[in-house]
Amino acid sequence: GAVVSQHPSWVICKSGTSVKIECRSLDFQATTMFWYRQFPKQSLMLMATSNEGSKATYEQGVEKDKFLINHASLTLSTLTVTSAHPEDSSFYICSARDTMTGVAFFGQGTRLTVV
Amino acid sequence: RKEVEQDPGPFNVPEGATVAFNCTYSNSASQSFFWYRQDCRKEPKLLMSVYSSGNEDGRFTAQLNRASQYISLLIRDSKLSDSATYLCVVSHSGAGSYQLTFGKGTKLSVIP
Image (cartoon, each protein chain N blue to C red):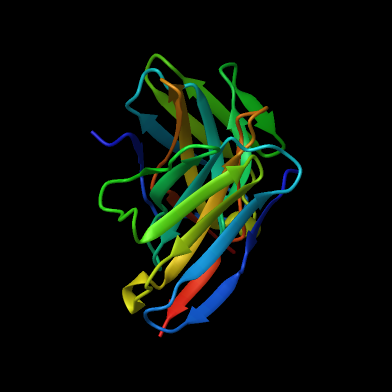
């Protein structure tokens, strides 16, 4: 089946540093990708919708200057958490929508811990 | 009204039981519908798409009722491995944008 590769799967960083997370669709093109955050025992929270070649659309309450999204190609989107703080510690998951079939597939997620 | 609503559960059912989940959506222009399952501390995985005519995949049956704006998932002969959170997903595109809206999920626990 379709595969979405998300990297890294986990990262520990110091407060104040930036972390980049990559999301790649391996065998399909994804005009649209989504970035989610999920805190323990809570549901997925959409952070932003990323469209190839254009600016991302952020959900209300998500700071676009803190969570930088780049979707430069049809198979790659990146999320950079800038100046990370402990409250940014969470499980970040990307999803890529197969342009042909309309089905969305998820990356394995990135567990971010800010210390 | 929330865009996509699901009963959070938990649904605790014995092995072998049949269990059904419903999901309602508010946007009548929604175009595609899916069920995903998410295991604890893992990413969601596509379980099945939901077609207008209804579709079946082994023990799983999905149905769509556009008039009433709900979709359902039926699981027959529940297995312990079916324990997970089931997410209802609705998509809508228009005006150059595409939206994918998730329900908060229904938790299923299949007990021996």
